[in-house]
Length: 348
Image (cartoon, rainbow, N blue to C red; front, side, top):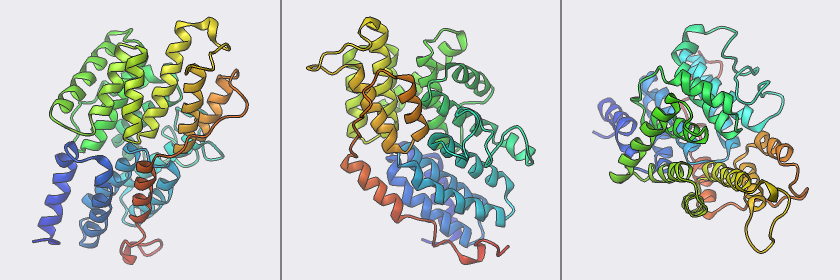
């Protein structure tokens, strides 16, 4: 019966393990938010906080503006703290540090691809056991930052660390993130080592299979892999068109920059000379900066301005797509403010 313990736990397991393979990730956001409320309200704390984890991972995968996620993470960390669930506190704190590294500012780490900030420090402080439990998550999100900030040494290091963990993850959203960015990193690095070749092949097969089975979340990742595996102007432009159509702002920002880097490598003599009548590396870099800015990754925007000093000083801002705006509004509507007051701050 709808609303019973058995129904809610079955729904949680169904969406966690299976449904995300066939449901677009942004459509799962309100489901996981509601499951967080309902499961905690009936005393099923671990699955409730597990739904809370996925209510954060889904918006990330759909590239919602990162500033929308910070209030959710604070609220979830407070609830986990009050319920004495240290493992979940560590996860939510790690995700907050990830967001601060993207945005820059006083709470960010000394390097955007490490976690040594004042919100989460993986190497010091307490909660050693909980941090070890979430080491796969820590390495995965450090890999994301390495791909975003184009840090090849960090990419290689995180691929090696993640190699120790099995592919399977009972939380499909988390498995998707890991396989997506391990694949991107292995291809960006050029499959120079046996480990990079192994993971590039494994990740491409993973998303190719899901694409054949009709997963709407796999196709945009697979088309990025195809462009990086066999780069050409047509392949990059096809990938960018698909990502734009789905409003996957973060992946589109990454692929616009990768396309520009590929163009520069082909014609380094054209670094500061470009044809105004035809899109060039400058146009794709400008667009990448606009998209990263739209996503909220200000630290990446600052890095790109510094790295590509030949760009015009006045940059165009990217305009949000209608789908991106709609998903953002959906996320705002599904806040966690209505969680039971009995687990609010200072009550436990």
